[in-house]
Amino acid sequence: MITVIALAIAGCGGSSTLSTSQYESQGVKALNPLLAALNSLKGNPAAPAGWTKLQSTSQSASNAFLKLKPPSSLSTLNAQLASALGAMGVAAGKLGDDIAKRNVTAARTDVSGYQAALRRYASTISQLGSKGVKFLAR
Image (cartoon, rainbow, N blue to C red; front, side):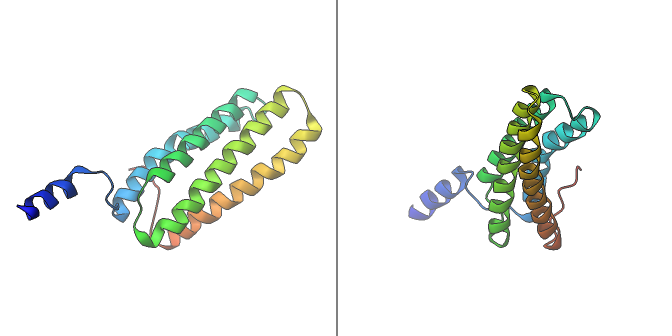
C-alpha cells in the first residue's frame, strides 16, 4: 500500500528534473518570442515600442528559465541565463524610456548596460552549447 501511494505521489507533480532534450525544447519555447522581438528591433532600433517589447519578452524568458528544472549539470548555467535575460529586460526598458524621452545622454549610458547583459547572455548560451545544449527551433 505504501508503495502505491509513493508511486501516485511521484507521478502527480511537474517537479521532476528535465532531460537535456526536454530542457532544450522548453528553452526554445521561451526564447522564440525574444528572438522575434530582437529581429523586429533591427528594422527600427529608434522605436521605443520595440525596446518595450524586448523588455517584456526578455522578462518572460527569464521567468520561464527560472521555473525550469534542468539537469543538475546545467542548473548553474540555467540560473545565469535567467539572470542575463532579466538584466537584458531591465536595460531594454531603460533604453525604451530614454528613446521616448529623447534623452541621448542617458541612452548612451544605458546602451552599455544592455550590451553587458547581452554579452552575459551570449556567453551563457555558448557555455550551454559546449555542454551539448542547443536552443534551436525544431
